[in-house]
Length: 253
Ligand code: 2YP
Image (cartoon, rainbow, N blue to C red; front, side):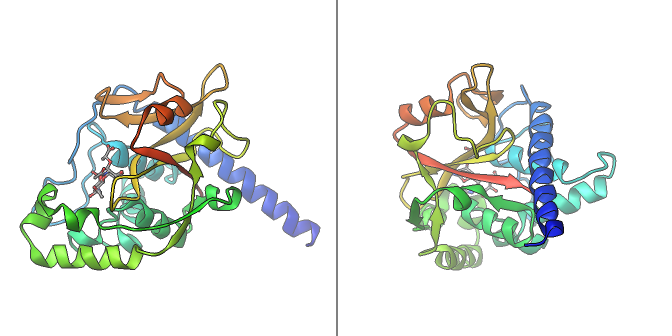
């Protein structure tokens, strides 16, 4: 490998870490905003919803990631373009099924768009095979599935495409209180779940507190707002029966 290519790789690595730090700065600006679920379910026709004042775990991460990728904060068109890239398959809105409802699909799309890096894949040997059917098994929980058999069929096809894929993860008993050297401030943390048919049941950002404990900056349905959880991530995971581990991602450009 030439000196130039080494320098380029280092620059790329440093650049993505700076982007992660920028993500954390932006995420902190959301602290105390209220947790509100289903803010994207407001229109009959699928369209780009931007509601920075009421967030759930996923929309919080999406807005922060889109802002982090938008170098000029005043460029609202570029922000909307980046948000579409993150939230919709190939960045194209084509009805409800084109939204990336499952985090595994959201990640796969982000990797294909070159804006998300799977840190767990680079560092953890642990693998699991996806078995995804939650939405098609619970259509009554989703307005657009209850009202449309066409949407339900398309979501089933999305689930079939994801099923059987092998993903990297980190089981909760291998996450120290002080985190791991490769988990950086501002990384996206996805909480892996054992809920049947679901891959991930929560999202947030990694942040190390003054005691260098790895914590979660997230839109919390328990605390009803965005906060740095008072419990370190290791404790959050050990207190929860539904969370089995994490997947770690980094925004890149
Ligand atoms: C997602 O749920 C929804 C998307 O349809 C929605 O429910 C699913 C499979 N997807 O566009 C998106 C934004 O509202 O939310 C999230 C949900 O987490 C909630 C929002 C939270 O903890 O605040 C993502 O899927 C992230 O983890 C799961 C979780 N859904 C369920 O637990 C059913």
